[in-house]
Image (cartoon, rainbow, N blue to C red):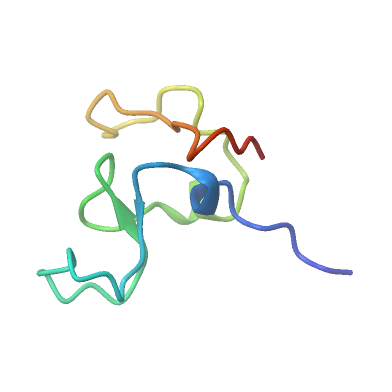
Length: 69
């Protein structure tokens, strides 16, 4: 069975570890809410980040160009 695509890829705040914005050398995806790396529970869709999550700096999922997972 195919794994669902991460909600993070459709979020405006998402940044790839290969992004030029990655000045920390992180080897995992990150975003404005989680600058030290997106928690696995969110990245693997086990938590819907349209709701607040501990240590997300008050930033939740924001649609990238109208895409809604």
